[in-house]
Image (cartoon, rainbow, N blue to C red):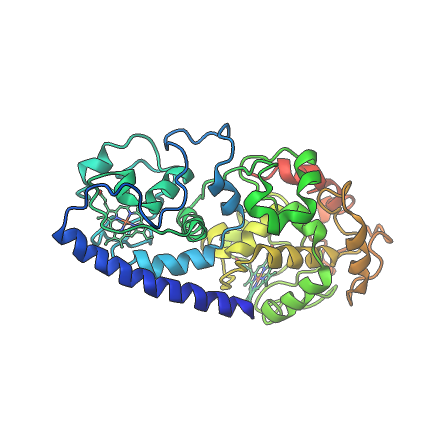
Length: 386
Ligand code: HEC
Ligand code: HEC
């Protein structure tokens, strides 16, 4: 896939970065870099850190984070940052502190670590914008810092790394809201449906804008992705058997752990409420972050567009599919393409009362009007966010 290409590209950037970093380590030891006027590599520092309110006209990192690639971020972190940092819960300090739970924690968050006074003197928690500023150029953010790391000049890389750092938590912070009109960075991703969705549902705090993408996604493409990535463990047909994972017919709008009789992890069983589009999006981004301890040993689909397509496909696996997000705006095509799916017959046709595959009344209590009431268009954005 082209993600290989991307990986290679990232890898080569990283290699260069490491070389640069090593050089800067040495250099910093020899010379005391007084503040350069402006680093050549610096891209665009967001305004003063400290206030990270949505009031700011366009915090670029918010838009980028929504489409950031956690997997790529993890790769960058494990290559570039791991020389000095550990990331696991309870991990030891290296040259730098352990970074588990850093987002939202105070500056100098690791008890017992000998921080510079430059860093200790910073007030307040690490916000997205502050991490962005810090990782752009640590020595500019906190002159005198001990972190002798030149910085990540690529805004995209910073977003990926921050998106990854966000996952290092039992209960990750919500993603920053993307101002509806900040179509700038996310434009590619959300292009088609951004506007209507923004109008329909004011972005609830943590909700990445997956809704519009799902509405615009191709279930047929999602089916291909699912066959390639998920079919080793999941069946998709009505009444299909569990493999390593549960059958996925009717999962959208169904409760978490929706297949009766399947031996789910308590991580997944403990999740409340139905599988909304946003919940699925988060889950498929990185199952282990969404439900730490889950049995689904699948790394995740880092590409938002792929997740949207897969979810659009999952949606069709029902006698009575859940309404598309922002359906008022762009409902048309997906109902159509849904029909092309094998197992899926007419979408709106049968108001099947018992639409559960396994014959068990999974989600039974709600089955009379399960999907409809569950995560419909606007509610989807408003409710589950957290
Ligand atoms: C050469 C070693 C080194 C590298 C490489 C490095 N760091 Fe650091 N980092 C440190 C040190 C040392 C500190 C403590 C800084 C201080 O006290 O001023 C630190 C502090 C931090 C903090 C603040 C932690 C806190 O508790 O407030 C964050 C966040 C951070 N680093 C993230 C990163 C990320 C992300 C990367 C990779 C992109 C990275 N670092 C690469 C050495 C490093
Ligand atoms: C290596 C096997 C494996 C792969 C690959 C895999 N899954 Fe899973 N999946 C599981 C297991 C096991 C569970 C049950 C998790 C638990 O109990 O914690 C699960 C659970 C789920 C659930 C929750 C079902 C419910 O009833 O709540 C969804 C949705 C899901 N997977 C979707 C996918 C999709 C989409 C893909 C491909 C992009 C995928 N999975 C790839 C093994 C896998």
